[in-house]
Length: 148
Image 1 (cartoon, helix red, strand yellow):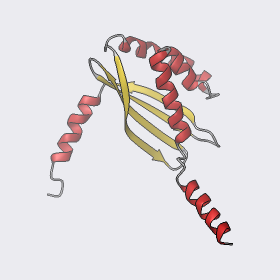
Image 2 (cartoon, rainbow, N blue to C red):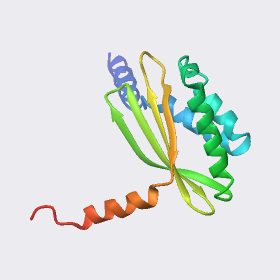
Image 3 (cartoon, helix red, strand yellow):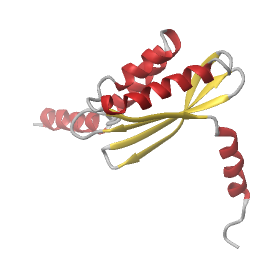
Image 4 (cartoon, rainbow, N blue to C red):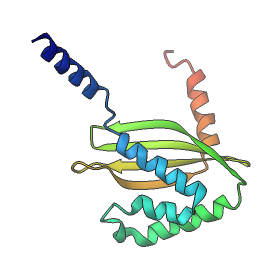
């Protein structure tokens, strides 16, 4: 009986430690591997490949790939990425934002995932160069005494 209780407890606690967002995080890791080693366009195509609705935004995806290829050619060598923020809405919507390090400047990549059933699919992917401006804004609010 004690062994059964112990096994149930181990199973319960092991289940509690599983990351429900791991599938989405793995898709981002795969994207960055392909982004670095294969091709920008191929990485974006593969990111959207499991979303059966992506064909409805083909022109937006192609525009995104063109802009990403253009800016990548202007910022120097790619030097990796780091997670900035992870935002969740319930158990079905997740945004992962990363700082992507280049020789000239950082770029933020934001991946939004949606889980309508059992699998995470890419909902939106975007990038921007406003990291410095947002740091300035957030530091002003950080140092303000809002209790006065």
